[in-house]
Every structure is written in structure tokens, then in C-alpha cells.
Amino acid sequence: MEELDVPDYLLHVDKRLNEEEERLEHYLDGCTRHQLIVTVERQLINEHVTGILQKGLDQLLEENRVNDLTRLYKLFCRVKNGTTELCAHFNAYIKKKGRTIVIDPEKDKSMVQDLLDYKDKMDNIVNTCFEKNEKFGNSLREAFEYFINQRSNKPAELIAKYVDMKLRAGNKEATEEELEQILDKIMVQFRFIHGKDVFEAFYKKDLAKRLLVGKSASVDAEKSMLSKLKQECGGGFTSKLEGMFKDMELSRDINFAFKQVRILMLDFIANLLLVTFYMISFIMPLQSMQNSEHKELQNIDLTVNILTMGFWPTYPVMEVTLPQELLQYQSIFNKFYLAKHSGRKLQWQPTLGHCVLKAQFDAGPKDLQVSLFQALVLLLFNYNAAISFEEIRAAVVIEIGELKRTLQSLACGKARVLTKIPKGREVENTDNFHFNNEFTNKLFRIKINQIQMKETTEEQKATEERVYQDRQYQIDAAIVRIMKMRKTLSHNLLITELYKQLTFPVKPADLKKRIESLIDRDYMERDKDNQNQYNYVA
Image (cartoon, rainbow, N blue to C red):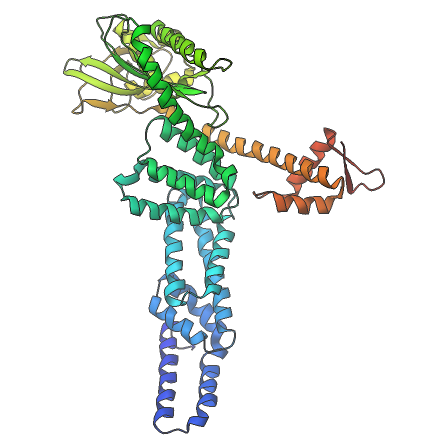
């Protein structure tokens, strides 16, 4: 054992056992078989179990030495507590290796794929080498659940983003069957995470983007994932997600009805501009085209998606100045919708808008796929060939940081339909902008990155903050629910009951803060005779 590597030693043990079996078969008395084999097993395996595992198991697992691991398992099955020791060391290896995948922020980009590959590798070892032993399967699941929650919230967030990436790419990267298999594997990882509310928050935000900008590659795959989540977590977990799909379906009926009366409601004189508006209660594609020789818009084809506020993520309301023709169309749709649904309120949400503008360059016409903010800026150049930053800002009234990012995408990106003077990567308040008539591109339809659709650090923090606030409400509700039923309860028993009811990880100190908050708000009180006892206040 001291001279040989573990794989070589295992071969040596296997060979010695086979030699003894041959001797028994050919010339030794059969009644000595049990004692002889037990002696060999004790001397070569039992006395070296810990040494073998400490010296070579990690290497065998790291290098995926399937044959050697199979031989190791079969040999350890021959001795008392052999598989128990093997299972314990197997569990420790998974936790140690898995923690290196999860805990390092530099590996965040590949974390989920690494976890999937790691799980596949360990599953193969359990099924092939350990003969699908249930004890090893349970140990594998326990180890994954342990290490994946060593870093709170981040794995849940990254799993949600990985699903978003796959459902955006969809069948372009995989067949329907392969995509379904990927989603099944994702659900296995999802079961391990404790902060499922974090997953829900990021998944809902990404699903909203896919639905609003038509980036979902497969409706069947979307609904399949929704079904898996519902089966795993229940209808309460997916009710808002299902509501988002229902909103999109109902909006199609509203759009059909609106288009039937559109011709009677509009009489404009210009070309067509394809625009998309969004509301906090709905999203609105305005379809028209624009001709630089005309000052007005005509035949705007408006499509509106009505979104129920409680189902969709919360988006910041940003005031902007829209062209008069678009404002008029807003008013027309409001009258149409509220005539059918009196008592409701529509709040327009321009921050998510996307548009297609028809532009005329020296090289010929092009379709520009842009955000609503980018469209508002570009439409200004129908009236002026050159405009200063301050003039643009006064005309569109977009928040200055958003306006600078918008101008940067139009004048400093790959598709430079505007020219900035002076040149440079950053937009300053003193800059001037010209329409770039010399712009060329081999594509007819050009997508200019919709900056406001990109997730920023602020958006990510805002999502995390919403999850934190939701958890506070859930803790408060659970405390009041328990105290209302029990009337009087000690601190320790209340904490125990809360851990049974809450579905996300929480520290005792956080629970104590919520209890103190409810005491301050007179939902409960400390017992006058026992400060460790709480009484419900009706």
C-alpha cells in the first residue's frame, strides 16, 4: 500500500483475491474458503480502507477513473462498513469540489454549466461505478444541496439567467428534445436551492423581457418550464407567471378589436413608422413609417398589450415628450379601451418601448430596429440636420443618464447613424450631433442595441431589494398567523414554528428583528411576567 498508487494497489488486491479463488478451486479444501478469503480481505482491504480513501479517492473522482472506481466499490463491498466509509468520503469530495464552483465570483459566468456537467459526472459514477446504490444517490443529493447554498442567492439568480439564455436561444442551439432534457437538468439544480424566491424574481423579470420584445424562441418550451415549476413548487409559485401569459393572450383579442375600428379613428397624412410602446399595465407597438419630407405621421398601426400590474415586474415610470401624433394616438386608444373597461386606469410605460424606423441614407433606405428613446431622438433629425445635446434634451425630456446612453448607442456604437462632434466614446453636454447620411451597412434591417433593455447593476440590486422586502412581509405574515392561532408562545417555540413555515433561508437575528417590529406596531406584546413569552394582541 505504501509503495503502490491506489489504482495499482486495487489491481494488486483484485489479483490476489482471484489467485486465492483459483487455489481453492484447484487444490485447497473447500471448507477453508470462508476463513481464507476473509483473512485476505482483512489484510489487504479492511486494514487499509482509510488509507486508500485518503490517498486516492479524490484523484480517481477528479480524473473520472470509471474502471478503477468500479473496482474500488466492489472490493469495499466485501468488507464491513466499507461502502459506508466510501460514501462518507464521496460526500466530502462532492462538497469540497462543488464549493469551489459556487463560491468563486470569477466563475459566475460558467457556474451553472459547470454545475450541470459536475452533476452529470457524479450521476454517471453513482450509476456505473456504485451500481445505482441508493445510499450514494442520497448522499450525492445531500452534498449538492449543501454546497450550492453556501453562497446565498447568487446560484438561484444565475440559474434563472441560464434558463433565460436557453429559452432565448431555444431551438437554434438544440432540438426540442434536447432543450427539454436541459430544462429537466435545470430543475434538478433548482430543487437544491433554498432561495427559490430569488429564482422567481429574476425568472419573472427575464420572462417579461422575452414576452415583451418577442425574444422567446419557443412558446412550447416556455410553457413546459412553467409546468415544471408548478409541479415542483405549486400553483402559488407560478400564479403570476401564468398571469403574464394570460395577459399576452387577452391582449391579442384587444388588438384585433382595436384594429377593426382603427381606420375609422385615424386620418393622418404621411408614411409609416413602426413603433412599440409599453405601459406598466400594458405594452404598445405603434406601427407606422416615417418620411423625412413630411412633418406628420399617417396610418399608425397600434398594437397594445395590456399587462396586469400585479403580475409583471415593477418598472420605473419615466416621463418623456412624445410627438403630438403619438400623443393623439395614445388618447384614441385610451378612449377605446376605457369604453370597454370602465373603472380601469392605464399607465403608459415608455422605458421598454422598441421601434422600427424607416430611414433614407445616400446608399439607400434602411430599417432601423431601435428603442423608443432612440426613435424619439432620431425623429428630431427630420426637422434639423444638426442638433446640440441640450436641444435634444429639451425636446425629448429623457433623464440625462439615459439620454447619454441613448446618444452613445446611436453615435458611438457599431451602427453610427448619427455623427458626434467632437468625436469620442463619451457623450458630453457640449456635444453636437448630425444625421449621418453616409451610413452604410450590408444588412437592410439593422438592430441598434436597446440599451434600456440591458440589465444594469442598479436593476440587479433593485431585484434583490424586492426579494428582501417580500421576505420581510412573508416573515411578518407567518409570525402573525402563528401568534393568532397560538395566542401565547415562548420565543424559542415561535422561532421553531417559523423555520417550519418559511421556505427561504433566514437567520435567527433577522427573525428577532421582525418580532420586535411587530411588537412596536402592536400586533403582539411581551408577557409582563416573562419577557421570553409573547402574547397575541387581538
